[in-house]
Image (cartoon, rainbow over all chains, first blue to last red; front, side, top):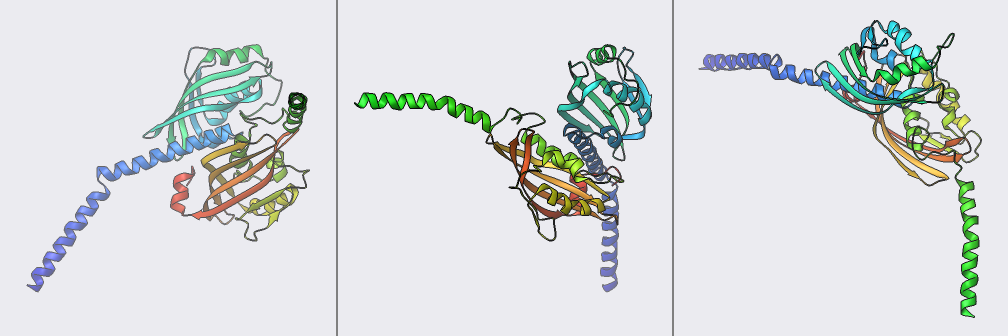
Length: 178
Length: 188
């Protein structure tokens, strides 16, 4: 009886162990982990936007992985794909920012997260060097890895964006980061 | 007699209106914004999200990072933060700068998030703003310190815009799990 009881207990414990193992790797555990990552990605992106809106100047350095691939959708000359953070900053961010007297800041945003993707719909405002306000609405789709964006697809109205580039000549050297 | 008295009172009231309006104009110069980036609430947000933000390798110069937000010429400044272990009170912006420059420079990193607010009361010459923030601090030794703080600032309207003349911050420590959840770090 003692051995039977011991055997039963051991069998019970083994069964519990199996159940526990199943629970650890069960779809619900994976779903919890995914939800945690989703929430974390959303927070990281939201907070980066908040810092930018409050006057921060390191948005792209902070949020983009060094090997990010950034695509500006559209058919104007400004559209295209930039491979690498520095390439994107040098060829897209800096040429535009250098033509502004007041950098673009987010003034409104909505953020969604779905798996490894974060989607941000935001409105930005700045002032061009000829004192004409710049306003645009953006939709950015960011694929996140380890808290940084590795792939970004950006949708915006390229007409006002290109107008700034066309109206104002590029400065000879230097420029702002954003 | 009574109507003469009433007329005199009315005339006095009418005469005093432009004077009062002029006084109001003197009290609240046009430089102090009630909305937008230069308003007390948005400046409070900038104060924590940009001014006190520190990335690895940054040196922290209080005057450069936060100087434009404080009143440096006022003799009526009172600043307190219970995160200071010695619970000192700063009676000027320069004193406050000297209290915090050393300890903050010793931190490897400081990241923040606004959890609530800012809530603002704008009284014209003075405004009060309150917000709650979370801070994820990393010491030089790599220890992560998480805290949540409720901070209240009083702003004085000056010809150069709103400037801080009062500060009170109450900090409570939170667990590593909590701070990782509310201020996630890309490498954390």
